Image 1 (cartoon, helix red, strand yellow):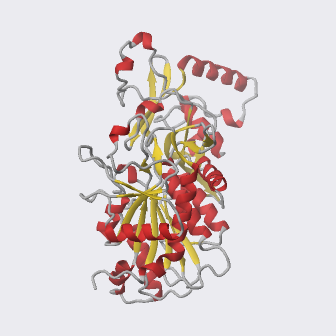
Image 2 (cartoon, rainbow, N blue to C red):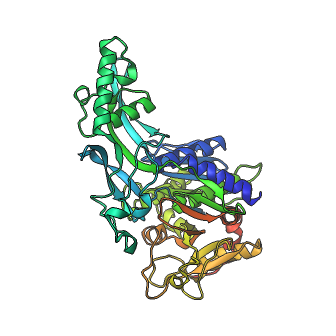
Length: 482
């Protein structure tokens, strides 16, 4: 498999995944197509060796696993963990803002985004909506994913003539300056008049029933926005009970650069690692006999809320991974003390994008640790445990790369700069599992538009696939705590 085909598949995944909900939905579709059976956490699990399964939590976290045919209770899990969320602007519970003759949408910042990059972009909204339905005379409620494809909003910058010092430092106020413009009040009123005339002339259409604020019960959001959402879903505006929506860029992800060597896209952090780990798991478990000699469980866990600390019911700080390991183990053995042994036999690759060396800011990297594009996955180290890598876990990951001539790099931050973190330390400390932190190098992290190398997408996919297929054999040769 060459770099361009894997990168093209990544582009398809990115363009299908404007939000964490959509990323899970796309992952679910791919897993089902590959023979994975969906489980529910609310029901008992009946599992078999040699079979493949997945479950979702909150529809923003997904865990998939394949049980080796030679698996017995007590054997370890080989896991790649990543996250589905990215910094963005999320709509407020009351998003209706009217100011200076404009209809604006109130948003709140999610994560540590480069917010200046959100200005002057063609924006839309996507997420999930809770709707009310009448089925056989009774009321039920369900969530629907929604995405308005066309650009409907924009956050314009202030002209330089009105802010002569802007090039000395653009520091927008996230409360006052980040509200996207949806429409003008004048145009909205004219639209209402036109539609009222249509009603008077007997030409009312289904999609125009609730364009007037007086005709919709929901006063928290602009009726125009609710109408657009209702049209996309195929319901009435008053059927919308609640939603979780975010602003999203409408420019599609692409393979670009003069030599077509880059991926230009939003949400590479961390959908790139989510995609590579998911594709590696699917491809490592889908051909005939792929699980015949496997003694462990191959797993991918894609969590929500990493960008805000992972402390949620579906974040890496929740029991979701331990729950999954426990339920699989107990499906084959009722001994509750078995779990501690399983954890110690397991291994986690925490996969989150890494900082590539920036040619215009080379002084921001430590001299001996400067990850480069096309250089392969980056092993992340931090003595203060902002990353969970140690000598043993680093060796395991590096040894598999060396065996298959896959490039590998190392990264530590400068001593005079703070260090970010990942789900690695959270899961290592919370579950007690051996962990290595890795990621593909990228530029413009947390911008609305990021970039990475096509080659590194292939490197990540191949490395994760090797991890799934060969870890059991390598781990049997490693002696620690003997």
